[in-house]
Image 1 (cartoon, rainbow, N blue to C red):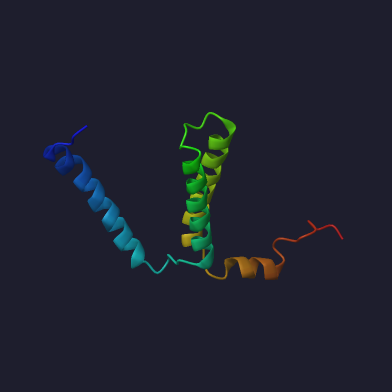
Image 2 (image 1 turned 90 degrees about the horizontal axis):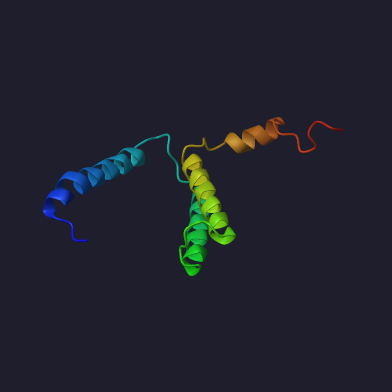
Length: 106
């Protein structure tokens, strides 16, 4: 299918402009931080996509593509959340005992 210039002008150009402006606003935002966890989740997502590509990017009906699809969506969500997580949130929560490792059972 060959795209005409009017399709590109009225459909794809606004999408690219919205995408670029969103990335530009995120890069100057003090709330967003790229951390080690963000990069690890992103690398994991790329690894899942590479495994899925070896399987042929099949429609997720058999068990393997469904599993890879769920894992990739979970990693994408974790990547997005880790961009906006405050830097000391997990250290503070663990140090304060908010999550007790033995579930309060002593």
